[in-house]
Amino acid sequence: MKIMYYTGALLSLLIGLWHFSVPYLFQWHSYIGDGYEALRVGIDWINFFFSLFLAGLSLLMLVYGKKIVGGNGDLLPFYGFLVFVWLARFVITFVRPWPLAPVSWVAYGQQLGAFLIFSLLLVPFLKLVGWHKVRGGE
Image 1: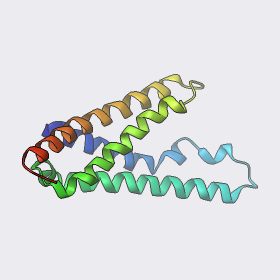
Image 2: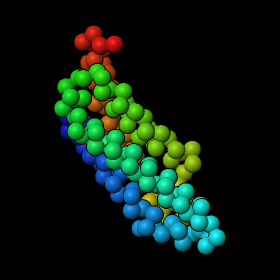
Image 3: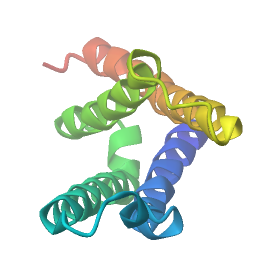
């Protein structure tokens, strides 16, 4: 359980950190005309705060991992929210799938990656919630 928890949280952190560079790696601005500076800034801000949120929450899960895995019920809602974020990330790949063109492996890879991280985080979460209920938590 600990290995799944820490692996899922670490992968989530790495995705959050990596996402800071995504607009530059994939040249997002090249798809937006020159007259749309507000759109460029808006996309940059959304990506920045998404990356900050995901990396920050994942880092907190790593920092407080010993307490969470130890059954601290006060931290379970935060852990549960991270699990929910990855569930939503996985579900959206079916609701609004990534286009297969021009590179199909990206579409399948991000879907598989989201499912992997969600699964790694979900199993320990369910065990901890069950354990917390057995111990008389609220």
